[in-house]
Length: 211
Image (cartoon, rainbow, N blue to C red; front, side):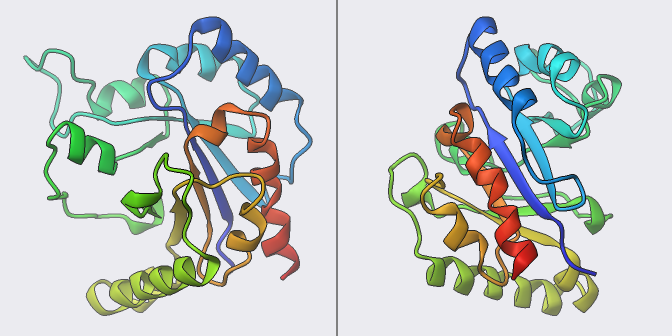
């Protein structure tokens, strides 16, 4: 079975309520490939999750930017996975390099019990927010190696079905060539996800469909 293209928009720590409403309106009015072709998930700051969830078109989904690794309790400022489930938030970004670098989060991860619910994002740290981007060949090489690692350390089925997406200065100008690579299954988009060109990045899914 072909892996469905995945485009995630990480809004990071940006936006006011009015700015968020404008971004959502742009997304709601966009003409993009159907859910059969591409899965779109946007990740606003925590405080705007209910606003985006209640106003965003139903064929796009919403993600949190992080969550507490344990259950709820005396953990000031944290948000648990159970809370996200209660808000009907189906996705969360975990282990982002900015949190590891700026907030000293550990590289250690919990054991994955259900790989069908996991999307892996490869983001070269030198490309995040710098305007520099890996070449299509570089991205393909790393994604291929990641898939080989999954085959060796998890299973061949997981390697074949898990979506591996590229992040790091993806924009409307480079998305089609990157997205056309065999093992690039979509993108995790930072700054460009706040702009109208995010629609062009979503439309890059058509390149993979026609390949």
